[in-house]
Image 1 (cartoon, helix red, strand yellow):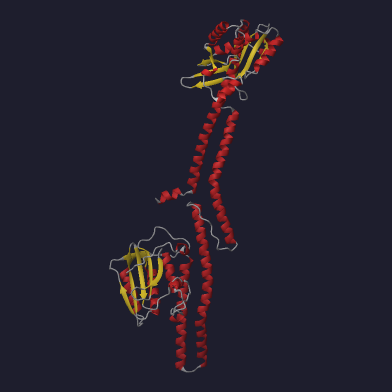
Image 2 (image 1 turned 90 degrees about the horizontal axis):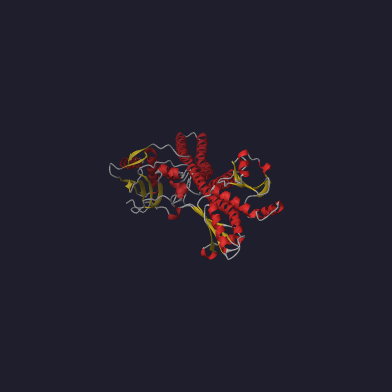
Length: 563
């Protein structure tokens, strides 16, 4: 699961998968686009080619005087084409609006069917509201020759060259390829082709495609004019993937891929810009800046780490300032007393007085040593993650050791032990855990009136140690303040009671590095203050980075009922 979660939020995999998805979608879109465009192109190509052919047929029909002649002529044309022409009423076929529009513009309508393969072609006749139609199953050379014969038949109604050329110009408006009357010598035909032309046969020339031009055919039909021929074409063959279509699809695909890449990169770029903005603010000295954390990927974790780092730096600077002020204040009193004692030693010859001043100096030096030790311990815990020697700690042995050490101080206070079973253990650094209970017991010893209770145990997967006393307790509004370095309250827990205000701060930091929590409330049994530290019985499989004490405060649950 951790591996799956890591892969799930990987920026590389997200971009890689996103690019694959974008390319796949663009590829499918390009295929669909090409297919759609080609369907429209081939439909237009069929209709343009068919328009000229059916126009010639309709013109031939118009030259017939009687219905009988029309019927015979249409039968002959059907035989010539190899497919049957017929005339049907317009109302007998349901046309779409676009097909009706083409019929009104005297253009053909082609309905192509794939299975089975055939094409129904419709063309409007100028009279009787009729439709000329033919069903073609395949395009053959016979149909091409038939179209050339129909063209010659149409031109037979015009006698001289000028009239024929004018008629060809008029007919060209209904064809998608040029029609012209040319001299045979200018056609560059071989001997066999010239011989076929002299025999009044239709010659079909095919030109294969080159790098610059499309494949095409040219139809040459003999004319009744000497040394002249009717040239139809070149008729360009349909090309499924013309160069301009490929270029257009490639450009569109590149544009869509660029949009997809931009959509993938822009959120990451935006997140990096937010982090960059935050870095600039920190560089300008604004440690209150916080970067918005969006998502759960590496950049989001980077933003969260940046916020934590900024908070840590801010706390370190504030702690350093506070520590500097507090240390200077704490050192002033013992140093002044030492200076006074030294002056007294110099001014008196009384041995008893000199011995008393030396004792005072020793007490102040011991006080300075204790202060320095507290400051070094707090600074070590504050500056970063300490090296913890985690192992199973027997809580019963720990409680009994603290009770024994506290009673050895000879204070008129009863220290009671509420030990767990002899096999109850928890994973912790024994040296730091001993320091926690020792500090709590020492703090309780200063404020208790007669009794202190030290207890430990395991409850619902969390280990705990607790020290409570029968003193005056701590008001609820001041309970958070006791963990602030060098903090002093205005009640009985004052400087006169001893200590430097670092003991509980050290306890709070150790609890944090244990991934635990520290709280103070009222002792339900003794009525004074009760300090409880809780932490997981088993260590987490992760390392806590930077200073998350402020962020995680309020997110961790504390076991309220330890009784």
